[in-house]
Amino acid sequence: MGNVSSKNFVPRSRKFVRRNQKSFFQHKHDRKYLTSIMSAVKRAQQWATFARTWHLFDATWQNPFDSAQVIIKHLMGLHKPIYHPMNDCGDHVVVMNSRDIALPGDEWRKRVYFHHTTYPGGASWTLAWELHNKNPTLVIKKAVYNGMDGNLQRRHTMQRLHVFPDDKIPEEILKNISNQIRYLRPVPTRLDHISPEEVENYPKIVDYPKQYILR
Amino acid sequence: MAAFGRLAVNIGRTLISQESRRCLNLSSALRIKEIRETRDGKNLIVEGVTIPSPRVPLLVKNTARTGACPVCAAGLDVKHTDVLILSQFLRSDGCMLPRRVTGLCKTQQKRIGTMVAMAQKAGLMPNIAPANSRRDPKRRKDWKKFNTYFDEKTIKAKFV
Image (tube, rainbow over all chains, first blue to last red; front, top):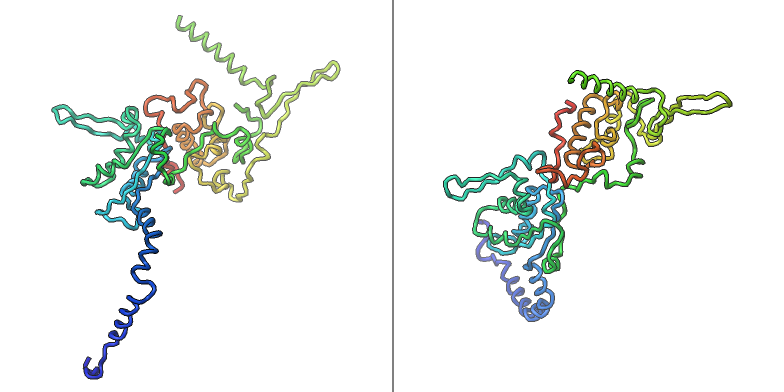
């Protein structure tokens, strides 16, 4: 700093500031011109940005606890670049075929749902398959509810989740849907749903021994 | 009386088993060895002819020089949802074929057997089952009617 004499030192920025100020007011892109363009395009873009999208999720053969993580992201708007906890930008998710969810291994028998009525002896333990018998939407609803943080927003976010046990979705909900969330695991094919010709002509790995009696 | 009953049952069993163990059989539709009768004038010629297996043209060639078993040699990562592969190792009633028939190594025989059980529990092969079983997996009892999938990492038999 000692080498720079204060007498000869002219801040370079002064000239630029003056020119920039001039251009700001006299350039063709002045405020009035901009607003006339924005009103047509940007306003609609603004609406689209903050509009609530409706997503469809087919729960056939899907693990409810894995799919809950994806559903939560869409319900809370975590997949959007404008996400902020104070920004109410969550979407709606419609889950269909919740009766056909799949649990791994022996989880239908091992997973337990606890409830207490607050009266003495009011505790009850319901197995997952018993709960699914009573209400085929509850397993996935509880998976989503328990997958979120317990705060004041949780119950409002849950209001945007619509679960249906089969593919019968009311028309007023169906007409809103504009996106489908991709499945997490492929739906397996049953052998009796494959045509006999395809089963017969599929490449074979082993052959029968000589004189083997087929049965 | 009980002894008589047991005797009767035993005789019945031996009769039935003799019938199924018979070398000559007139109903040759399902056998790889077929019995043919030809009448040549006065002589009746009965001969057993070995028919080529229906699988021969579809067979995957085992090119391994190390003598690996067919599944190892094919280099397949078989899952319990691959019902087109798993059904090749089954009898029509859903039983696993023994190792002397399949010709697999011990580990693969065990793995395939476990995956067959997984596929049956998941209801993916309801048409290969005992005659008296419930064919529709949706009509099973309790938790068995709900969809279940399995992780192949839980199979105990594996290559170390």
